[in-house]
Length: 212
Image 1 (cartoon, rainbow, N blue to C red):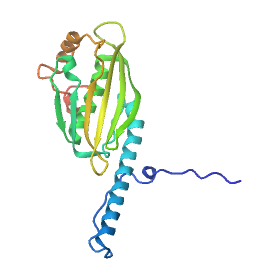
Image 2 (cartoon, one colour):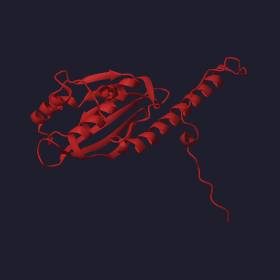
Image 3 (cartoon, rainbow, N blue to C red):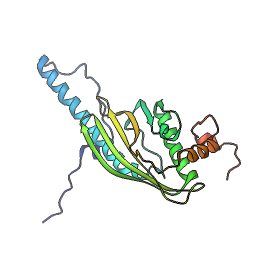
Image 4 (cartoon, rainbow, N blue to C red):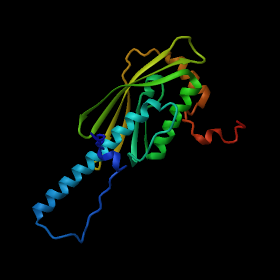
C-alpha cells in the first residue's frame, strides 16, 4: 500500500485569510447572497482562530526566549495588565502591535535580569466561547538578588477575537492569591532597575549603554 497522505488543516495551507467584497460578481438573490456571506465570514473566523490557537500553542512555551508572531493580532490590539497591582504597581492598558511588542520585550528583559532558571509553563488551553481563548500558565524562577527559593506565579491570559478571528484584546490576570513573591522586595528591585517612573524597557533602552 502507498504512503498515507497527511490531512492538512486550513491554517496549515494559508497563514491568514482576508475577504474583499466582489462588487462585480454574478447576480444572485438576496437570501443566497446573505447565506454565502454568512458562510464565508464563518469560515474566515474559524480559519483565523485556528491559526491563532496553533501559533499560541507553539510560541507561548518559548515566550521568555524569543519574540512572538504579531500577524494574529489586530492593528489596535489592546493589552490589559491586571497583574502589576499584585506587586504594588498600577494596572495599565496599552494599544497597538508595537505596544504589545514592547510588553513582550519587557517580560523577557525582567525574566533574564531578575531571575535565573526562569521558565514559563502552559498548564491548560481552552475555549470557553467561540470568540474567547483562555491560557492558564505558571512562571517559575530563582531570584538573583532576593531570597534563595524558587518563585512561582500562577496566571491566566484571556484572548478575545474580533469577527475576522484576529485577536483584539489580551488580558493578563494573576490567579495566585497567596503569591510566593516578596512583594515589597520585588517592588524595590524593579524600581532600582527601571527607575521611579516604572517605565518598561524597550530595545532602545540599551542604545548608548556601551554594551557589547
